[in-house]
Amino acid sequence: MNYVFDVIVLVFLFALYGFIHSVVASEKVKVYFKKIFGKLIAFYRLFYNVFALVGLYFIWELAPHPSLQIYKLPPPYDYLVLIPQLISLVGIIWCFKYICFKEFIGLNQISRYLRNEYSGTELDENYTLRIEGPYKYSRHPIYFFSIILLLFRAEMTLFYLTMFILFTAYFYIGSYYEEKKMVRLFGDDYRSYQKKVPRIFPFKI
Image (tube, rainbow, N blue to C red; front, side, top):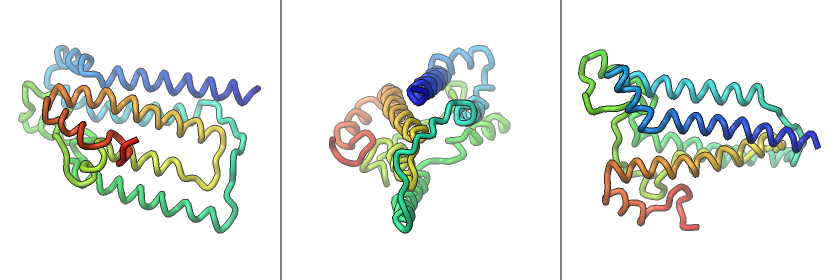
């Protein structure tokens, strides 16, 4: 029964984190922030990323850790999971070849602000329609490779399985709202892209 309670608390905390994270990421909040602080919106992306990491850290550290062991691979099979993990890491690196990492974490925005080059119409990030490289096979390849990285484990506990399911659910929910924004920005070009390329997994489900 303690395991059930621990999982419920873990789901509640992660859901609360996801809700706050989504609200802070919403365009309405960014527009409101910009009305108050003007071009200081350039710092928003970096602080948003820091907030996301700190929030995850507190959940990881403070939430219950139901330790029920679901499986543990014996040697040498435990080393086999390193293969899909390595492939997924290479995949994530491949994705970032098509993304400006400094723009992604928020450093470019601050650099533009300090050079007095921040656009009056710009919010926290310059968005680009990417349809090359891994984006030819998945509209959200970083999510796909992250799911693969998290899935393959030599040892699985109830805590880790719960977190894996929650992360996967969050990726799907987050991708839905991200795509609504991309449709607003790129219109028919993005709708056409949606019809041709699967959302996360690089095959039709």
